[in-house]
Image: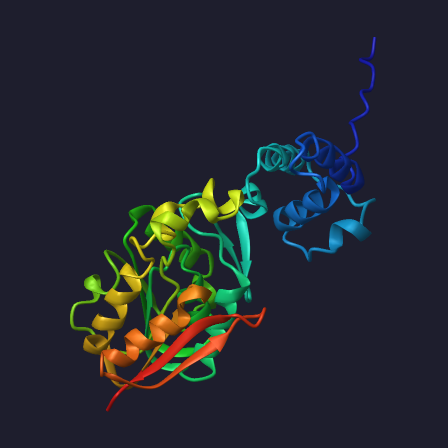
Length: 294
């Protein structure tokens, strides 16, 4: 007697997966927009445009991806940022691996990279407080630098950054080195044409003013910088002239409430020229740029 034929279940459709994910996500009151979140997470997991899941509901996904997506939805239901749920974050032309060991790269920092590349895109670049490696890898894939060196005080962050470097090894136009240590310290007396940083700039007392998705999920070591939020920036401003070549650029992302203070601190050092404050995408003062005096 022949064994009965068993019909293999069809792979699940995108529309069914989104519906399942949305139900899970919306099961918690503070995550009301389950469908939108599900689509964004799924787009990351499929490595497609964010709009793709909305217009390709009849496409199918593998059972393995189906399971991964449901696990990501569970994380989102408990308040995890979408990028941590997917384990990925978009940054300029890159899609970087991220988890709770590093900050999620943000659009403001993409603009910081744009400001740097429009002014300096050759020579040697340093990225201070690199986190996921977003700035360093953007410079090394979009610029024409001889080399890019990045530092971070967190060994965990360095590990994530190195994995992202490996992810884009074939796209790099310059070698990228990651060094563990505080701010400029690991660089010794090396020289650079540009030093760029998105450092910690939140005061200890301001931690509980941050959104829950930041305060409860992102690493405090990458957020907090002393009683006034200036500890790391002050170290960079005072130390950068030792590493910058003559005419080299210092480019900082700062707290919008303290941009003027950072510019004043930079001017008071007496070692910089052409100090400027530039706005972010919302028009708020976000970046301080200065050149080392010749």
